[in-house]
Image 1 (cartoon, rainbow, N blue to C red):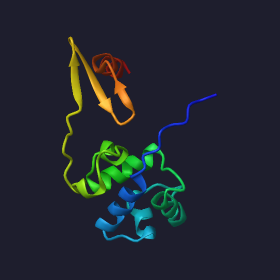
Image 2: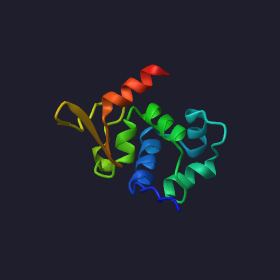
Image 3: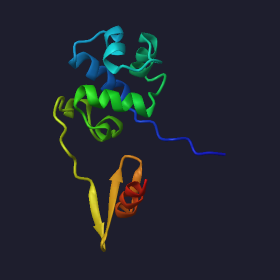
Image 4: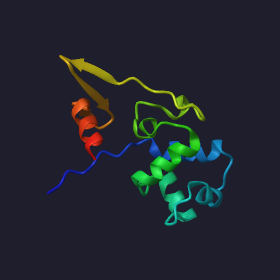
Length: 122
């Protein structure tokens, strides 16, 4: 039995805010996101919260809006706090001894050095 992942409650409103900020219709968002499987009905489901977008879709929303994907998934960032067009790094790290641990909306992730080392080996 697996664990059900936590659903960001503000994500639908944030995705709608992105589309409205860009002055796009749902059909125009399909072209902008450039993902073959996306339909206007699917975008509507994302905005209504009846379906969650996958990682690739979230990344594309992040790219077209200039928002950090963390800000999309993090419910502590309100829709009114989103800064479009500027990717501003949010500092969410703490030191424990010499190990850097990252705090994410989904809990602590670390140690980052080990993750980065493994990424460089690929």
